[in-house]
Image 1 (cartoon, rainbow, N blue to C red):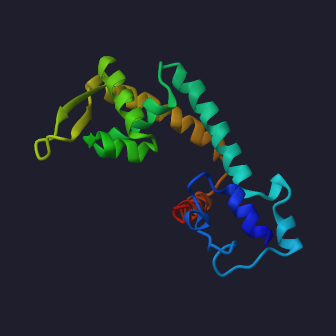
Image 2 (image 1 turned 120 degrees about the vertical axis):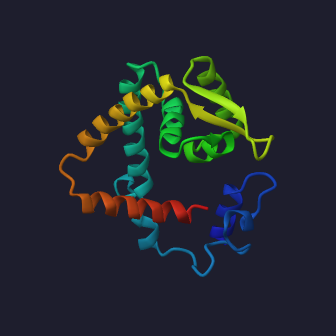
Length: 181
């Protein structure tokens, strides 16, 4: 079966079709092989949603990097500052989750931010295994400057959008995100 051989090619060593969310016989559970029309549906990148998601994200990050660089920040440190600004004190693993970063990467970023005076760390009072991170006054100031950069990019990219359209985009993207587990 073509789908089964394609599935085996997509699986990494030690991973079978079940690991990819497909039944062992190939295909998507409850769905047979696509018809030629269905297969042609995403043959053009212009109709492939992930093409546009990737392009929007790449351009967004490029614009953000241009503005953040003026304050000596990068995207990762901006995400950490923004998460702490929004949620207050967080554990390193919580920051990792919010910022969509690997835990060891987050730990290195936080250590660098401590050295720069942007954050402080301490052991959690309730669980000594958890390292809590808090903004310093300098970090809070930098978080505001970074938020201003984000506002500029947001206003530039969504200038002629109605609030309901932005809510619709957010809702659709959340639905896609939730299905990619």
